[in-house]
Image (cartoon, rainbow, N blue to C red):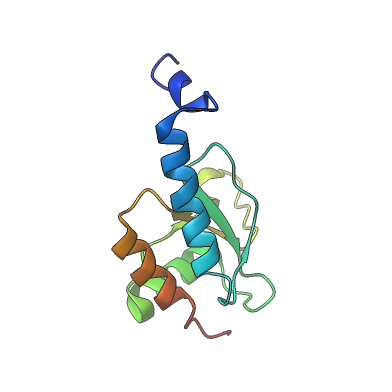
Length: 112
């Protein structure tokens, strides 16, 4: 736990650093078809796609890789019971150019 503790301090530069990255990605995805869930204390955003596709999250993730060149994580990978909430994880622990390129691609995602 000690290695995580400094990031939780309000004035920590790492906390501000990742908040800026999160906020940048949220702003870049404002025109995307995804609905973003609030994120705090993580390097990931959760993106809901249930309103535009009934694909399983594992299929959505494959489509994003193949059709748009963006790697995401299916949230169902963290369940053992087959739960699929139509949510994917997006990491914002990337450099700005990668975040911008990924967001640009995700804004082009077409509903199925």
